[in-house]
Each structure stands twice: as C-alpha cells, then as structure tokens.
Image (spheres, rainbow, N blue to C red):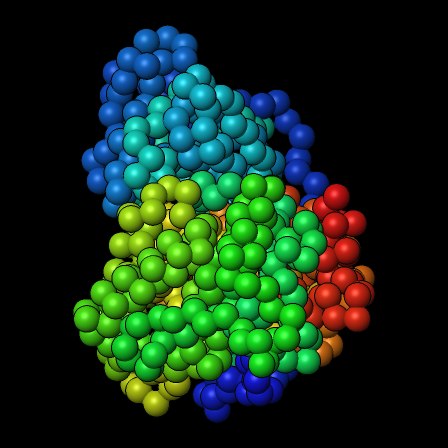
Length: 558
C-alpha cells in the first residue's frame, strides 16, 4: 500500500526485475473430423463390481451402492490431505473433438481431462442428489491418449460419481485401456504455447488442472469492492469518517495496525489524533458507524502492516503476542476479521527453505500458525484477506527465496507458503498490481504496469496456478475465482500503475468473459466468478468528490 506519510519506495532486486516487450499469443483452431460417436471409457458405470481400469490416489476409491443408475457407483473418500483423484487413460485420435460427461454427488466435485488437451468442470455442491457435469475438448495434432479424471476436494468428505462417459468418433475396441497411477492433485499438463521469448524464463510454460481451492464462507456479494480507509493517519487525501463511506464498498480495511517493534508481534491500532485529523469522529461514533456498516452487510477488517508497519514473527512468543493483540483489536471494535498487508522485509525466506508447501522459516511458520489460531477462535465467518505485492507472489514463478545456490533476494515469492497454507480459510487475495516492476506472466513474457494486460496476466497466474521457480514438480495450485480480487490504485495520486476506467473494464472483460483481451490471453479461461476489485484507497477515491473508481465498479457490476 501507499505509505501514510512518505512516498512508498518501489521494491526492487537486481536478480528479480527485468523489462521486455509483451508478445501476443497466437492460437490456431482446426475443425474436428466428423464421424459417428462411440464410447471410449470402460466401466464408466462401475457395474463390474470393481474399479478397474480406474485407479484412485491414496487407495481412497471404492465401489459404492449409492448409484444413480444400476447398482454401483464410484465413491472417492477425499481427506484433509488427498482429493481422492480417480483416473482412466484412454486412446484418442489427433485433432478430434470429444465430449466428457458424468453424474456426481457431493461437495466440490470435479470432472476433467488432461494429457495434451486439458479441460475441466466442477460443482461446489449437489444438494444431496446427483448432478450432471459435462465438458468438451479437442485433441492436439499428435495426441493419441488422454487421461480422464474425477476428484473431490480437501476436507470435503466422500464424493460419488456414476455413468461417466467419453463420447467421440471412432470408438476403440472394447478391450479396456491400461490405467495409470493418479497424477498429483495439481497436474502440470501443457498450456497454450507462448510466443517465442529470448528472456531467461522457466520452461516449459506452466499449467495446472483446473482444481481451485474450495472457498470458505465469507458473506460477500458475488462481486465485491474492497477499499483501505486511512484510519490511523492523515495524508493528502484527507480524513474520511466511517459513516461517510459510500455503500459501494463491501469490505473496508482499517489502516493500519502496527507493531510496537518489528519483532514484538504486539499490534496496536491507534486512531488518527485530532491534531492530525481535525474532523476525526469520537471512539463511540467510530464504533457505532462500524456496526451500522455491518448491519448493511459490509465487512470491516483491521489491516496489519503497510510499509511503516514491518512485522516479523521470529519467535513463538511474538506469534502469541500477535494473536492476543489482534484479537483485542477485533473484539474492541467488533470487527469481522483481518487483512494481512505485510510489506518490505516482514516476510523473507531463510536459505534452504525452497518448498512453499513445507516452509521452515520462523517468520513464515509463526505467521501461518497465528492465522490458523485466529481462524479457529472466530470460526467460519471470520474474514481473512491478504494484500501482498507482486514481488512476493507472481515473481515466485521465476524466483523463490534465495534460490538453490543462494544470491537471490530471499523475499521473492515469500507470501506463497502463507497463501497456500491458508487457502481453505482465505476469503480474498488481492495482490497489489501497482508500485511494481515488470513481472513475467504465464506466456513467459514480461508485463509492465499501465494497461489492462498487466492486470490480466498477474490475475491469470492466481487463477491458473504456476510452477514455483519454474519447477514443474512444485506447482502453486490455483485459487478459486471467488477468492481473487484485482488490486489497483484509485487515482494517479494513490500509487504508480493507475489505469483509466476503460482499462479497468477491459481487464474485467478479458478475465470474466474472455472478450476485449489485448496481447495476453488468459490460460485459466473466462472466470465470471472473479470476486472483484481492491483499491488503495477509499480516501483517494473520495478525493475532490470524484469517486471515479467506485462509481466505475458500480456501473460494471450494478
């Protein structure tokens, strides 16, 4: 975020930032041959009494009597650590279109195909009955096999699947195809080929199967507007009372809670003093205004950090102090939750900490532990959001920590283990797509601030997932679209990287509808459930009474 009292420095590192022209991705489509359709899957109804030729990860698949038709169905016992992914590999013809369909029952059930061509669909829940899922795909020019899969999601319990079918021209012989061992829950099948690049970049271009996080309940509207309120300081934007915040804002982040010292973990929220903010309301009016916003369905959070609020939880004592002091702030003002806006040197990875799924750095491990404790204390309705900079998230595609040989900036990608560990409890991630250097996207081209393409490329990385530091065996999985908002500055005064309302809308069109795209084409496909926008800040949006950012949001998503 923009610092309250000084101009915020750009985070930079010689090994991290580079500039290059963004290249257009050319996609070609060919018509699939026409022929009579046939069935390609064996035992799609599980009536043989066994799973064969299906195989399931962790041995978590079985034949169940909870059938849609016939007497049997697949049961996948998804656990806290395994999504019970069941697969079958079949022979297919090149340049041919196939239709995959099936009936599923349960929460967060997925159906898809990988292995050259990738396509998937999913349902958040079926209400106790079977629901049909279907998706089509076209094989590549040399593709001769495809792996069909279905799976549940972490901690969502057993799912059921029945009457799975893969239809296409020229069905193979009736003999069952040979199955393969299930791939990891985040697969790394090929994505659309990028245009050639001469930059030093990870290879190959990343992809994951479209298996996003199961989003937690958050009580947000389908499309939400998030803004930061200068509540503890004054600057050129002036002071805005909570009662005067327009109803456009769905999430209000009170900025900022800051530590008594960098490593204390003891967070304090000091309201702006009258000497600095002459129009500041009383504590009683401030609390009453928060309650009035909440009565309208708005969420009010305490945001911890900012540039001036460096937080390093180096010890378990600091972790416990963080939990206790943040709880005290939430309880005093009756807040809905917490926003993590750690910047600068708050998060940095120790040498040798190279796996985002199993972090060992104390400041990371202690932060994860603190957030899990707060979530457990306040329950399912606790709102948790994060606002990292691109340096700490998307840069992780190229660089992670100090690297395998040391020498890199140890902050590169340092938010990834926190996001990953909290993904089932994370209400919103809104990366600051501003005050940023150029970042490489999934097309292996560098993208810079100032237009829609930057926001599209950065957001697509969160919706598609990416191999960390180019390692295709270590993929950061995608988030659910409803967990993602795009961070932008409200005005030219608020931060570097301002874009006009027309460019904001262009980015939203491309990400949610796959229309009006520029040179970057999203690998994640259209995501109409993208949650919305975040901006620094409400105060700057109010400046001079223009409300350009919030009014444009209201007109785009009325």
